[in-house]
Amino acid sequence: MNKLYGLLGHPVGHSMSPLMHNDAFKQLGMNGFYHAFDVPEGKLNEAVEAFKLFNISGFNVTIPHKVSIMNLLDEIDEEAMMVGAVNTVVNIEGRLIGYNTDGRGYLTSLIPMLKKPLADSNVLVIGAGGASRGIVTALANQGVSLLTITNRTLEKAIEIKDNYLTYKKANLNILSLQDAEKNLAMYDIVINTTSIGMSPQIDAVPISIDNIKSTAILSDLIYNPLQTKLLKIGEERAITTHNGVGMFVEQGALAFLKWTGQQPDTARMRKIVLQQLGGFSC
Ligand code: ATR
Image (cartoon, rainbow, N blue to C red; front, side, top):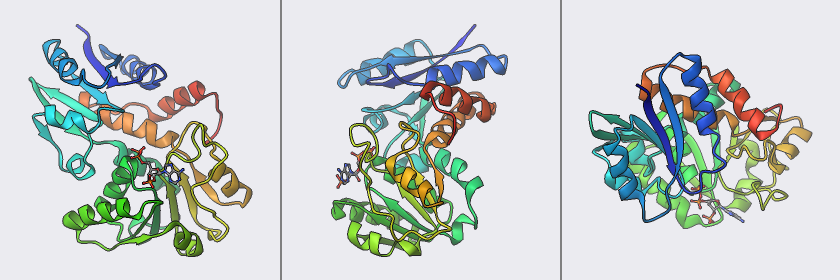
């Protein structure tokens, strides 16, 4: 009998997860099937009850349910608690266990590109929303101690700092966007976690990179478009760039591993995602 998996979110019509996971089941010769369920706000409880009833083996959670799902789970792992959001749920004999694979997925895609160990790198994170929390938590758990957050609204960056210090007692700096721009030459890795660069802001950049150092890695969590304006400017200046496709693939692969105990072929997953996005490089 097929084991059932799913995505729970709204909207989910353009999700690439079903294609990616169903291909992995096929490749590994597994009887798994993954379906995207469109669950509007206010219907989450009923959807989770239905998932339990039908014994769904595992599922992903996306916007707008990543935070509210936490109240409906039996257990939440430490990293997901730190992030304050869950994107992956495993059903173990009726007990729902929540994880967050976004930050770890991001690092898995970033680490092969690094020119020096992550723990010794000076990292600037732009943005202080949910995506930023995922990345900052993963960086902290990976032992990064030189970490700065810059954001339009400084209070939101300070909130993350307070949370991060509770867990890690590490040194996290907060800078205004103007000061971050001025001091950009200090950073080995610059990561955009904001939505600037995505439609409808495709011609905007979150920060000016005039002062970026030539050996820096410029990273953007956005994968649609594959090359944001920020990454385009970086590439024109011969800076190493990294887009969000790897994160999308790796967060999915980590979820797949948690559900099935099997490691899917991430190169193949990446190819499928790139085909969907109509792109060729990243
Ligand atoms: P997500 O969960 O995707 O991270 P979010 O929680 O809404 O989404 O966070 C969006 C981030 O993008 C925030 O850091 C936001 O800055 P503010 O905290 O100041 O709102 C940032 N952002 C979005 N649009 C922006 C804009 N036009 N200029 C500057 N920052 C912007």
